[in-house]
Image (cartoon, rainbow, N blue to C red; front, side, top):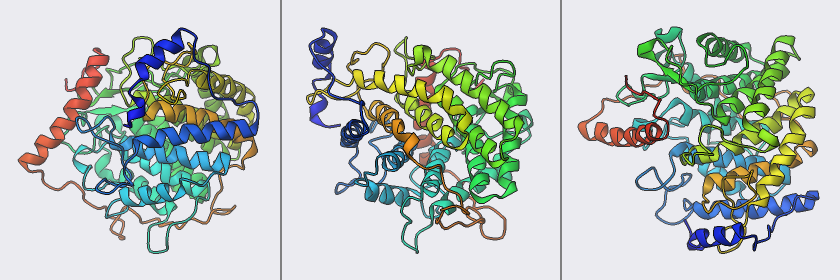
Length: 459
């Protein structure tokens, strides 16, 4: 974090007194591009991976070393890819390229050795979705001796389709955590399965390979059947424990759970040539997302925002939801009439409160008040960057496919040994390994339980 953030509280007090005028405008396309450029620049002041002695591709962390877990950097690079796509500004493309390739790890499946002992399926999934995005946007291809974007996405999908990650508890579904020694291994949640569904749907559309589509259908059916997707109102609930056969559903709602399914459903709608089944599912998800997370058409994190209990992770969810809803309008155009006006109003509210910091333009988390809340960070900047960049979505082409503009190099065996069997990343853990992983998961779960006492992890 840079020193110019130090006076955030003072700036907040001045803003609340009505003495600070928002610097940003989104009145024209040029205004949008200028605003997005400044927000992106301020976001990247938190990134030091391009400095000597630092690790390429990650944000400061994980706690207690810094605020951010590994997965959020993967989400940030995806946000910057969308920024490039919408604005045409390629200033950060070299950073994105270096980060994505470095964090892919020795087996090119986003399971680098520095995170395997604390790795969740959702963590890996976010990096995989960013790799998939690079393929869909025809982002510049890496050098020929490095894995292609499509191959990286396929590697993540294949490792998560590994039978070792799917068991009979709760009649299927991915667990939250991958190492069996971690707290959270006994929890099957919507974001882990949502990322897998999302990646499968997008790979199906990109490659026209029905295997991916079949997995997406199977994952949706499991989430619907177990009750994570409310059968009546399409609210998306967080997860449940395997010891209870996934019947103790934690009904907390987070926007990224709904958003990741919405984008995946839009891809399934497109992949199935506009099937009525996926049209209905997508339409219900759009309505649920707007009704729950956009009261008065302004993004709002219902489970934590009013109570000031959002964790660092949760402070980044609004941006993903904006991005995923925006791209849905390109591949399922019938959704545009509902989605685009909401995203426009939400973005206008987002920039209004960006009056913090020494530069007078840093963004907070709470958009509905129109006043900077005194707290900024990667998530807050990323949210506003996504909201502003997405205003240009109507001027961008839809995501490409292998048959229509896609150039990314794929490998259907990525993530396996090449003979259909899977790489084993779960080396026997030493006492020190277990202690390290235990610290990480304790920090995650202690924070979650503190915010949401009704989440009974490890019962």
